[in-house]
Length: 232
Image (cartoon, rainbow, N blue to C red; front, side, top):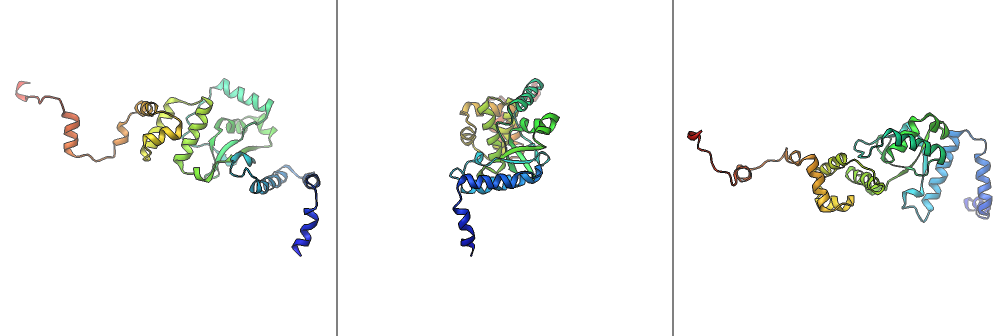
């Protein structure tokens, strides 16, 4: 019975299916239309030959569901923020915001595009209070991988703060990533990884470590003559 019901649909051309969708969406309130479009896009994405690519599924979500992460190393000065707002108003959103689900929807990349979509009255009105988002692959949902993804996106655009980059490198060290893995994942060489660790300071990395007295003696008294207190 179900097969018989599907036969008329299967015989339809792509143009006819598109026509049916257009008729279905016509006249729907914005919120209902967005829900329907997101469902259709998701269904198409699941059958797409590019389903492994995040950009294959761009969804529109309410901007109040999207929030910043706590480690973004990128910063934009007020003039550049105004330019970004002007660009979005003139050119539209040409890049979605990269996200992952975490107490709502957390930004991995696109923090400033997300801010403009929330804070600019003109942009917010233009896009009906929504934001375009893609979701990173499930294999990147560990915080270490998300932090690395944020830096890769920023470095690819040449926009990042050295101090914040340093803090993330040190944080990844605390999370037991080797220098080699950090260099590979963040697109750095070994010297750059070392310099970024030195900016923040390595002392904090070892604050919770237990060392033997012998280690301490070798580290801090090696090559230093003992002081004769009677000569002081």
